[in-house]
Image (tube, rainbow, N blue to C red; front, side):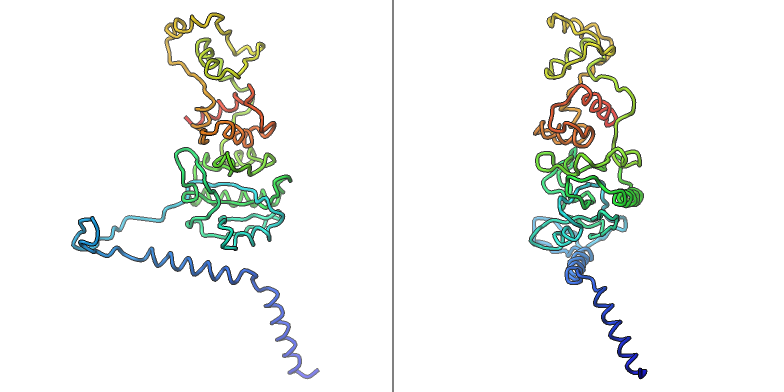
Length: 322
């Protein structure tokens, strides 16, 4: 075969290879870069003194401080995609009409797609609240796990997630307690990640809270008066008769004031609503907050009320947040 034909074949093979490797998201990547460029231009702009143009009494000239840096994320919110494949999620997150995105998408095979610079605001949390923070998207990293919501999370996916979380915590100094789920911040709307998500494994690696091992004390057993007060606040809670840590409640509730007066120290009255709120949950819809708590920390009978065992766990976590 003549040499020139060999060159032509090699060239055609190279073109075919390039075509095969062409990024299918080249067009949306171009749009991404254009948006970032526009935001960068806005950041580079300096305030222009315009005396009289508004109600501010402007200085005679602009003075830029030398002491500043970038605002950094303070929370990590974990989601499951509720879709059938990573490809489907990537497509969803690159269609402007969907108005939804995340910083990271992690496939079942462990492949990580870092879709948005960590300093930019993804649209993943929606209407949400955690503690006193109401604009979650502006202060968080969103991570979507490719999972349909009914299946276990794969080992390659979890291994990659732990690596991503480790880098985020190291880079931005995100507090351990600030790794939470979508259902935690939006209990009335969301249920992801599902009850199959291994939150304890994350907590064992330093990402998120978890309760202590071993028998946990009852929140209703500090003293008889406190126990009675807690019972009055939480009439649905039943103290087991065989619980040696739970003192007997007075039969005559009229004696409560006298018992309270005899106490030398402060009384701890446990109220599940307050405990959930202090942990971070939005308790305006208490049943939804309880469901989100159980989805994260109990992961069985998620739709049911708080049991005595659930209250022990809640009390243990609540004390960690004081």
